[in-house]
Image (cartoon, rainbow, N blue to C red; front, side, top):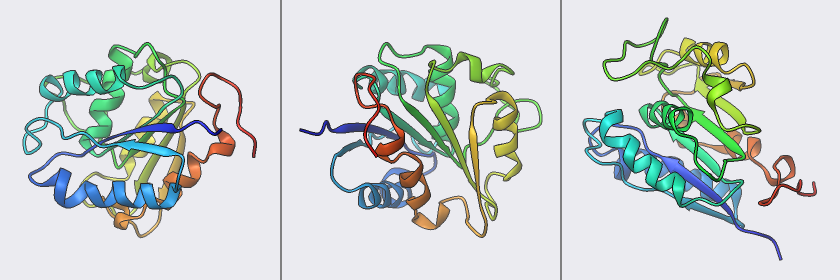
Length: 196
């Protein structure tokens, strides 16, 4: 019997982001992955005014409910807050994969941060053994594509995926994300690698 793989998707910010924008990304991910995945898509508090102070406790609660070897995905500011939460207080059950999609980088060279800046040794603070993927559309007019390079600088183990012609919502197509987190490349829940 094949284990169901858990995915936690943290939405981006802005009025209507959960129901009118990022729901299309989640639908695309579910379609592309098919059976064998449980995609959790919680609504973040005060989505029209995202902040780490309000979102991080909700993110930590969601992370605590995941089993070992889960996949965590964050879009836009949701990705920024997700990776900060993982570095600040890693969950007991470590994720197998961390995916950032069009995430703004908060810190030197990126956006200024009133509440936090991402540390220069971010990669070393993330749960050990987790694969990290950074996806960014090269036509993103919301978050400059150069932010993907800033993440690569502080998370040296990250694999950066630059998607030509794609905007901030990646044209509502997470096919490349699904491919990057395909079961053949992931350890099965409990640590053994899955067959390809």
